[in-house]
Image (cartoon, rainbow, N blue to C red; front, side, top):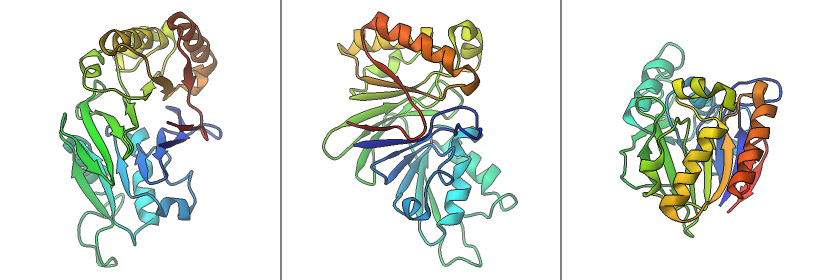
Length: 256
């Protein structure tokens, strides 16, 4: 399983992109910068998109991607709440055409919306996707994605504390997890349903207690203006846990 990070931050700038990553070039997970970071030929390889929730920084790239690939039919998987946000706020016939229905200038709809149910495995283009309820906003989901050869990654999407109830359901080789704020902003992190390094440490300790091991860990969705501070604190908890923790960046690639 090849993971390519297109965007790894929670704010956009000349040097930072909103969250999105690819699996084996064919499955996109979140779409903050999906179209802008890929060539047209790279976009055409994508068969499906998984969305963790409906906040703009995670769905921003979907309309641009669809508009550039009108000759394809791309499946978008998410909770029913997230799909409703797409239909009512982006593909609403005002900001963008209603791509899910018949359009005069298209032979067929270029997008199919597929609702996911928590705790129900779904085959998505040959990958088994187990959707689990997230802690961020109503309708947010976490995903354990299993490849045809049994390799697994778990992606939290944006998340606050309280993942321990999910750990018994997953057994990934890689965890991609939200760390948006430094420890001095712990209250802000909790109020906004995100993690800081201190909270990350507690979640990983619970994972190890429940599952008896720690997988490879990559943190994502960093506040770029606070990134140096976050990186230093992540390094500290890595040393305390005696386990390596990587920080995602645009262009980063991982093979599991």
